[in-house]
Image (tube, rainbow, N blue to C red; front, top):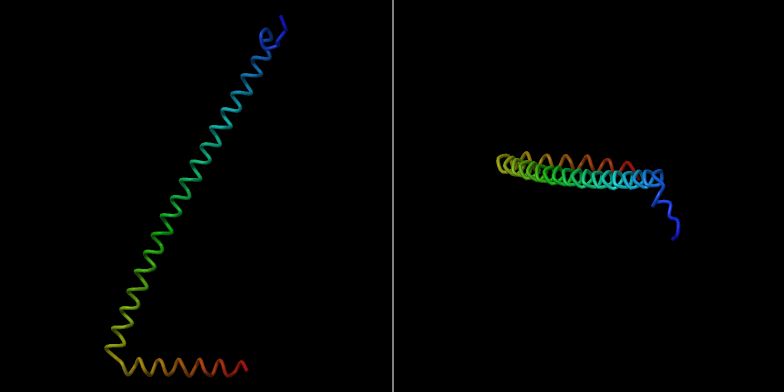
Length: 96
């Protein structure tokens, strides 16, 4: 019969058990980290989705308010656009 340390040596069994226990703990820790990362990514995705939805709503509201303002005061809108055009033209002309 061949001698195998694991058959008779209690220290070997203890070491083997510790190694297995360490491996189990490492695997459980890695699994928990993976689950936590997955949950964090899901939460970030939901937050980003809500922020985009909120931004789209705010832009639509601002656009509607702008359109109502132009409809109420079309002359003021034309003068504002003319003024913005003049300022922009002067700024671009000065860069040449």
